[in-house]
Amino acid sequence: MEEIYPTGTGSARVSGPSAAPRSHTMELATSRHLLEPGDALATWLAEQGQPAWRAKAIRRWLFAGRAMSFAEMTDLPAALRGALESEFTLWTTSIAMHHRADDGTEKLLLELADGHRIECVLLRDGDRRTVCISSQVGCAMGCVFCASGIDGVVRNLTTGEIVEQLLRLARLLPAHERLSHIVVMGMGEPLANLDRVLPALAVAQHPDGLGISQRRITISTVGLPPAMDRLTAENPGYHLAVSLHAADDELRTRLVPVNKAIGVEAVMAAADRYWEASGRRLTFEYVLLGELNDSLEHARRLARLIGGRAALLNVIPYNPVAGMPWKEPTPEARERFIATLESAGINVQIRRRKGARINAACGQLRRLAAQEMSPKSSTVASTSPRMPPSQTAQ
Ligand code: SAH
Image 1: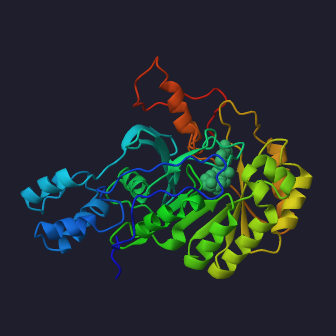
Image 2: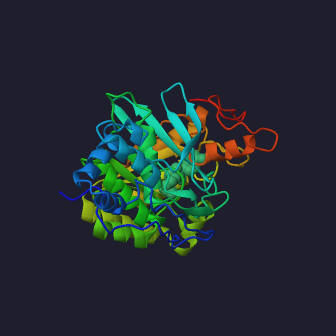
Image 3: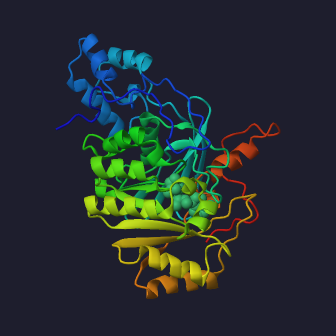
């Protein structure tokens, strides 16, 4: 079987997203981060005269044993543990905040080595233990209702930083529970950082990693056709979710500015090509914004656009972001919207809002924390988030 960290696959070079109107990426040196792809550990062990199987043993401690430090890897010789400690970093992030909601949703605000912050979430739903992870610091796509993109994109996350989110979230579970599903729906546009996201998801699937089947991994994209086609060609086994939010170019470009250079038709064609290659039902996401994209006519247009496909429509009522002018849809508008689509034969699901009280919608916690960290208050750790008055649990 292929190694969990195949050799020669990775440097920490960060390439900028291709369709990135507000991109200013930078490089981060994480060559000795144990979770980065590459053969640094194997090479170093060989230099130390250590048997090659030690690399696997160390990773087993990390992934299955949930070790937090080399010191906990008690079946390694003490001298080796000490040497590993000084050569390799296990954690490049620290937990700046940890919130837990009544429904079991937990959210981590992680501080990266360069001080930037990202969010990741653990959702509990029946037997499912789903994690929602980020792919970039910020986002370049500019969706007008999303907190993640307000300041544009800062940089891509490295593979190690993406894997680290998974490991940190897995450690929130009791020993007998395991992560079951992954959704790449946190901060950032994963298809603008496929070179880092795909190796991280390969680690998540590997039996020596987290052993999560590809079928249980969803990649959510704003719809970037060249990157969708790359996924179609290289790896169509993931569940793909495409964020539409509007069925016509005029409205979609207002809501999702990156659409201007792409167009709904090209997004749908790329989604169809992915479906043909994967045979897996597509998901289309539609954030329902009060009086903006929630009318009867919008529903009819959407039904015409996605009708006839093996697809699920995921309707997500807008989760208010402090300072943004958008409205939640009224219950009547929501019902009318869904009923119209259902009567046109569309398979509709309304996304239940989990963790609203802990600002679980992407990018919200990071902003709230930044506000709280104004010069007046320097405390970072907190377990009871301050809620904007508009935010109520559902
Ligand atoms: N960039 C990717 C993945 C991250 S966003 C994408 O666009 O799909 C994940 C989903 O959350 C997207 O469908 C996005 O539109 C939605 N979202 C962002 N902000 C939201 C908000 N305030 N309320 C509800 N959904 C939101």
